[in-house]
Image 1 (cartoon, chains in turn red, purple):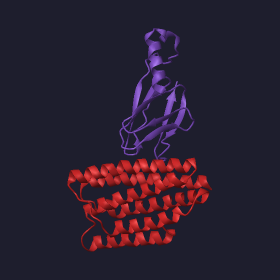
Image 2: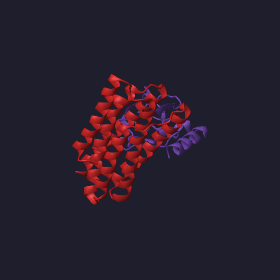
Image 3: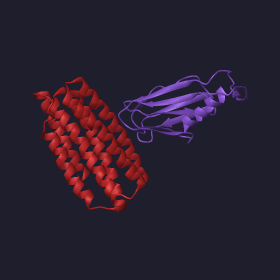
Image 4: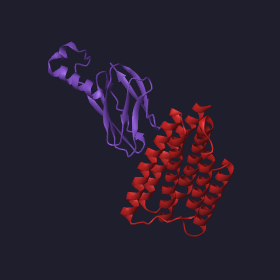
Length: 175
Length: 111
């Protein structure tokens, strides 16, 4: 989605903005947080599906399968939770900027194939997980009001950190 | 596979072959459970002996593995699955999840 810096900057700015807003006025609300977390998972699933379609590399495909499996599992929990809590996920600027950046990256990756695709996908997975980890740790988890939502986000953070580590390992393997 | 070898082992025991098996403690093998939840292995049990059994239970929503770094076991654990490892030799075995490299543990097995 990016030339990394611009994406990171965009997300960092929007997160900084929501964090500043949080201090000044209302925090990011639970319906918004649920929307952001779900969106972040869906974005990674879409990237993985592209990798499964494009890549011929077993390590890349295995990694992509893991992303689909893990994020599907956590998003399933998230849907069950919002239903239970009768929370309606609410679209917001952070979700929008994540989606816009992802669309751009998707387009960029779609033009690549072979080793060039594998490398770009793996590098993007590192950067993307890093970004979402930051959002979870600094905005979403602190702002979450409902205990069960907070706990699911904490599991999400742990999962994203594991994926980041795995993605870093994958980047190393592809060199 | 581990489960099958356990069944064979317990079958052998019930057939009265116990006398022919080296059980240095003169005790029955113990089963120890390591539960996986929230992307972590539960604490590794202390006092493991050769022929004891580790039962892995995945209580997490994610698929995991219990994979020995020395290649002595590699157990696939989808959510709610369990699997067993019979400890054949004394020594230290490090293990991790193949999917989530931060999930790690260590078994210390004495004769």
